[in-house]
Length: 496
Image (tube, rainbow, N blue to C red):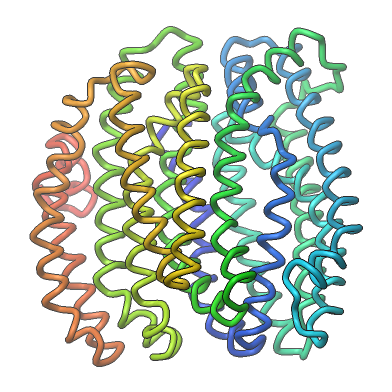
């Protein structure tokens, strides 16, 4: 499959869950209430921290599965897959027992929840412990079709379960069930998804046979993962720290007012990352075949379009944050979380500058730099988040995210280009960043002028967003889109 088609299917796997989350979150919050929704977010973050046990074999497995598939080495391909399954089964077991036996202590001592919430919270974490075991194996298996550049398979499966889970969640809540049943639902759906992926993999790799991993395969994968794990360690710690700190230092109610706008911003902004994600196995494949000139060309082209898409989406979300939250949820959410959504959205856009260079860097077998920068970013971010939450609550957490993103993302981009990523920073700025900024700056001013109108109702919000969207589309076609791609795109709509 082509790089573009793979990117499209990878995006599909994220678009459907994101859209359903946008439509279902208001109902889920209204049924569960602010306290219980905050508790659900807290439990998710606790389970997320146990994912630190994951030494990120997925990254190294993706690297070498794509490499051995490209070179036709089926024996080493089988050994790599089997090694990954064994590792994630072990990680799942350790995490499952750790979560199960620490649940009561976490809920009663660390977070000191009210007595009325403790029983359900402990039960939910213990059920989620089983989900952790299943989820580790499922997430590893989910990565394999993409490593083989068959994102059509992984994307469709993600889209399918991304549709089923939110709809069943609504059905459970409508039927009167609560927090514990929601956790059971997620566990069962993860198990079903893992079984479906296994079936699809048998069709995708008919020559697959169980193969005991050789010593050199184990050493090679572990060596790559040692540095790649630094990135995962930093990402998981950083992604859950704000919620844990807010839950411990402020309240679970405040956590709800933080999590909902953050979830919306993250869901929407993460969509474009799915387009970027295919660059990791693509870079590994091209490197294995010695096609580095093609890699440089693909990287600059992807950077140009991805930077524009991320910037356009971030601009719409940031300028319309207050009316979106007010109309989507309640004016109370807009007042409490509007500034949070603005800052998190901008932080996500700045963070997106690192996505493609990190993927290419790792695809070329140089995960050390990405890992060390990720650790430094997490350390700075955690310190700023703690200070921010203690002094300014949820707005302090959002501001900490934005500040650490600006400092560390720009430092990473400046460092890797011309070193581990074979593209000069001046070339990247000229061919990728400059055309986008020429369009986004004036549209941002237009968005600020339209903001008062957008707050008056849904029709005004849609009209304001449509005006900005149309200007962005026309500006993107005129300034960002390359002539040959613009001609091809317009021809699809019958325009010569």
